[in-house]
Amino acid sequence: MNRLHGLLGLGWTLGISALAEVPVIPRPTKVEEKAGTWQITEGAKVRIGNQPESAVILDLLSKASGRKLEAAKEGEAASVVFSLGKPAVEDGPGAYKLQITEKGALLSAGTGEGLFNAAQTLAQLLEASPNAVPAVSISDSPRFAWRGYMLDESRHFSGETAVKRLLDAMAHYKLNRLHWHLTDSSGWRIEIKKYPKLTSIGGRGNETDRSDNAPVQFYTQEEIKRIVAYAAARHITIIPEIDMPGHADAAVLAFPEHDGGGMIQKGDPKKWPNFTFNPAKPETLAFLDDILKEVAPLFPNAGMIHFGGDEVNFGWKKWPELPDVQSLMKKENLKDLPAIETWFNRRMAGTINGLGLKTGGWDEIAERDLPKDKTVVFWWRHDKPGILRKALDDGYPVVLCPRRPLYFDFLQDPSHKAGRNWGGINPLADVYDFPAGLKLSEKDEKQVLGLQACLWTETCLTQARRDFLTWPRLVAVAESGWTAPNRKDFASFEARLKLQLTWLKSHGIASWDPFAKSPEVSDQGAAVDYPDKPE
Ligand code: ACM
Image (cartoon, rainbow, N blue to C red; front, side, top):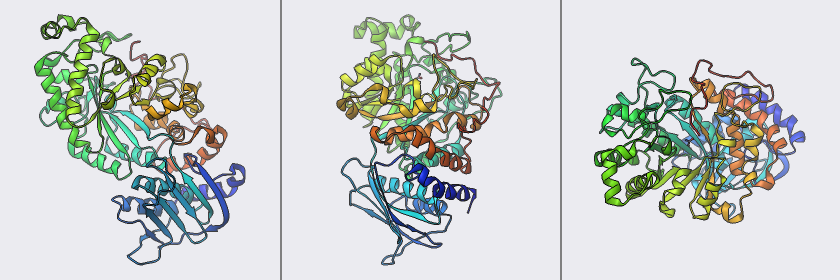
């Protein structure tokens, strides 16, 4: 059917003795190889049941096998059978079992999510060896429930086609959370019908082009709904981020009345003059409430709105001069700037919680006195392990996404030039090892929801560069998030990764090739004036 099969088919046949394992990423929990092989035929019948994502699964397996497969009718024999309701293993909704015999494949799980994961494993086996899949019995379940990726749309915009391609690739590796950073100082990227200027003015330009005739780029609500549904059919939850009270320049450009003052970025005195929202003005709070209320229903399965909360102290110097802040301080007996920030956080988290949602926020919020059962902390400051410790000790659920090694705007190879190097870079091996260095206790591990990589796009003018920085490191995140520590092995991962570089390429994704050391995609000419964020 395509180039992939020639390469991968040979890969597994040859590779099986070298790999001594099935060519699947993330590496499954338990694999028993059996005698014999199964050949899937053109028109083979697949019994999927009435999952909402049946069409997605049928298409996935047809493409993976290079054959047009058909849904089995009631009572018709099928060679691929999905069985819901027989949990393969007790632990976790993502768990599944896959048995391949000479006659066909049986995929069983207690949830639709588990079945979808089983389908992805089967797809990888078919891609590797479409003409003779070795018989095997796999029992598998994830280490962490949250296996994610954050995409910054503000600095440079990706668009619907690229995001859908990303979602397909995430699903291929059983990644299940897309944290969508939709607003920041460089551009507001989500349509808010009550405030069209947010996008018509705030959506103009990006990190590289701030001119008056720069294009306006944002997602309409219709596009957002389509993308969220596309993700849901692939068992990926999209969590929107509306950053506040900092990173507000784009919104304040459209609505100057909500300005709370700016900050001077190291190395660039022009950035960012309107970095914060006014944290105390009643009209500003009502404006932010309106936005959150419009955002919530666009993400019906998110269970959360991420409200940023990061780096506020870089831009709060003007706050004490604002009359609304002065009267709030008096009224609420607020003594200092952190107290104002805490008051603002609690106020906006109240709106989010009132919508029946949890509040997500960057790790600064661990010091902002938010309700533990309604708040998720995203630990990003790798150089502040004490904040992670505090968040865990205080009982917050935590997503791990430390700059090192999980920020993908850091260099991935010492030979590369464009990107961050803050006392170190983020090579594939470090991404793969994570989170071993944290030495999470059993108790910690229960509170850690999981991990995610973050792509900040200051230096990404093109999709080619976004792909270059993301892949193959995101494949390593998938295995780190899924596979138990005693099953992780970097040499084995690298061996299996080679096949996946071919898969990524055949799906239009321009991964960096760490084996061939393919050339750097630097987008030179882009804003590479690091550091972009003051410390
Ligand atoms: C962040 O990198 N400011 C979360």
